[in-house]
Each structure stands twice: as structure tokens, then as C-alpha cells.
Image 1 (cartoon, one colour):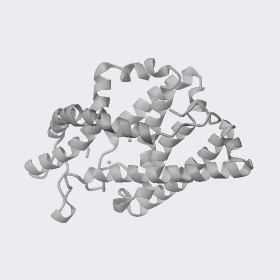
Image 2 (image 1 turned 90 degrees about the vertical axis):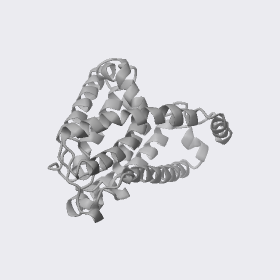
Image 3 (image 1 turned 135 degrees about the horizontal axis):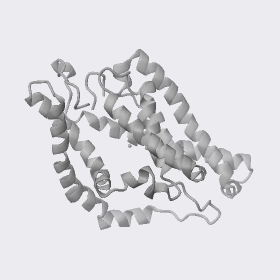
Image 4 (image 1 turned 120 degrees about the vertical axis):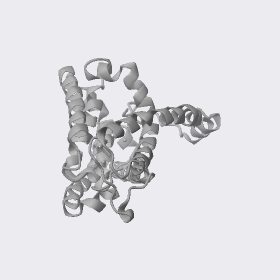
Length: 279
């Protein structure tokens, strides 16, 4: 929800729920299931075309090309469907997994082609970084209730802008250009708690809107978002970090890691609900 606009709560049957934004986690996890399966199929095809599976891994360039095909198999159909379905049925399109997969696939494309993207000229990397930040700012300021239905084509601006920032920071450029701004300590701190902040901001906005009589003005929305930083930091400090550093979890991860054959390539490639209620 954009705290700048006045948001009147709809009728009870359409009312926003405090945990509504958790649906994005399900979309993410579904992608993590589909994406590895497609990669496995693409690598199997690569092995078949080279007669011997180990030969496919001996040629990183060809393996990456097959992985790139896998990315496109998700990205292109999902984007086309997202544009169509968002135009035809904007309310359900916001929640449908198939209209969202292309956004995650863009991130997957950055990982698959990380080596190639890192080789772009420095001037182009700096340009991408600043252009990406401007694109994110424009989407943040102008994607309100009057903006085109989301995701659809409207999703291209924030998604490609985020990808541009990441691409611009590769190959040592993260400490210069836009990376210098994003590397400031306050920015990095917000980045650290961003996941917890995402989980906390929406319930507080929904409850705040209810307590304010169903209407959330800009100044109160801003106050609520700023207030959400406190529980977000507490969650990050006392839940997220301890769980990440849990020794039993780390030991389990090490046991589940299989050794990588020497013939594999050594270079491995380096996250608005319905129109009336966006969580």
C-alpha cells in the first residue's frame, strides 16, 4: 500500500488482511521448485546433445546457453501472460503465480549470465546503476491507485530497475557510482533489516488504517512505516540472525552439500495485492 494516497477500506468481504502479504512468499517458493527442475532438464538435454554428460559440464559456455534457454522458458511466457491477464482481470492477476514468475526469472537471468554481464564497460555499469535507482524512485512515487494495473507491463519498470542496479554493481563497481550511495552505512542497515521490515510494515498499515477509521493519509502512513523499523530490527536481531547462525542448521547444510566434480565450471553466478488492497 502506498502511504501517500488515501486508502478507504472496502467492504468487509474485500477488507485487507494483516497477513495478506505472505502470499508473495508462496510465489517465491514455487519458483524455487520450478526453476531447479527446468535447469535439470536443460542440463540433461545439454548432455544428450554432446553424447556424454560430463562433456556438457566441460564446456561452461554451452551449459550456460542451455541454462539461459531455461530462463527464457519461464520469463517470456509468464511476461506475455502477465500483460494479458492483468489487463483482462486485474484483481486476480495480482495474486496469480504465473503472472509473477517473470519477475523472479529476471533475477535468475542475472545469475546465469553474471560472468557476461560483469564484463560490460564501467561507464555502462555506472549508467545502469543510476538509471536503476531513478527507475525505482519513479515507481515508488508514481505507482499509486491511478497507475496501470500491476504487475503486467507496469511491473517492468521496478523489476528491470532493480536488475540494472545489481548489474551496475558487478565487477568491482559496487563501491563507486550508485554503489557508493547504496554502500553508506544507513542504507546497508536498512538493507539488512529489509526482509523483516517487509513482514512487519503491512500488518501495521492494515491495523493503523482500521484504527484511523478506514482512511490512511500520507503523514500517518509515513509514521507507520517508520515505526515498523523498530519491530523489524528486533526481529532481525533476535530471530533472523540467531536462526541464521544456528550451529545445528549450519551443520545440516554442510552435510547436505555434495562435492562438485572438478570438470564442472569453477565460476558460479553470483525479492503492490489486488487494485483495492495491495499488500
